View 1 (cartoon, rainbow, N blue to C red):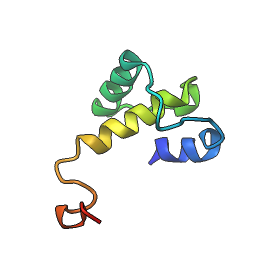
View 2: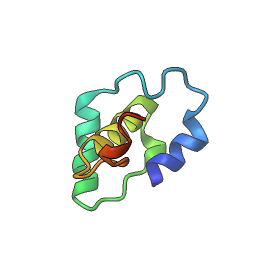
View 3: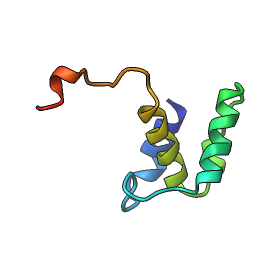
Length: 74
C-alpha cells in the first residue's frame, strides 16, 4: 500500500508509468527488503518505474488472479 500511495502522490504525471520497465536489480533489491520485513521508504527511490515494476511483479506473482477466470473474456 505504501508503494501505491507513493505513486499516487509523486508518479501519476510521469509518462509511461506502467509501460516502461524499471531496473531489474533495483526491483529485486526492493522485493528482497520487503520480503525480509524491512520498511521501504519509496521516497528514496529515484525512478518511479522501479516502484511500478515492483508492483507489477507483486500482482503477477499472486497465487490467485485479482479477477477470477470467469471474467477473463469480459
